[in-house]
Image (cartoon, rainbow, N blue to C red; front, top):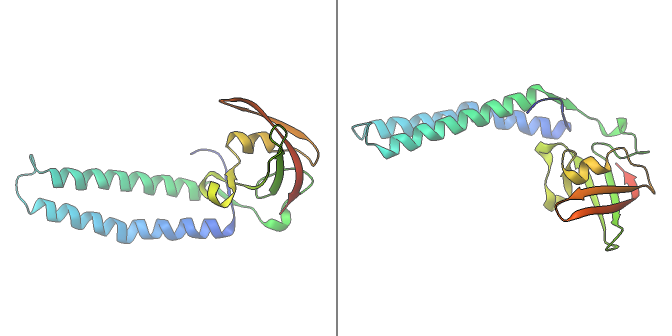
Length: 157
């Protein structure tokens, strides 16, 4: 990850809690698994040891990614959001011009994106296409199936 990572205060707190867990309990669990595998004998042919070492590498990579995300995080407050145009943390109601289907999404950072909760990333194709649009404007978004047009119906916090 590079650049600025815009998040809410709650998400930043969750990220810090997860980082603390990974540094303490997570590392301890992996160290315990490696120690148990070592006790089982020859390390050259010990699949359990190899798996534990691989898990350790993945754990450390996740930890480094999370540390970077926290280091580049900038907290966005709800009261500082301009609802005259689509921006991060806005809830935007859009209508697909072709199908007339209406949906409301909240534009969030990659870390917070959750399609089931109607939270899409500002770096997603739809998120990028909507950024900066105003109510009544039509966003043309390129997808693998062609260009889809969405009309911005409403912008709220």
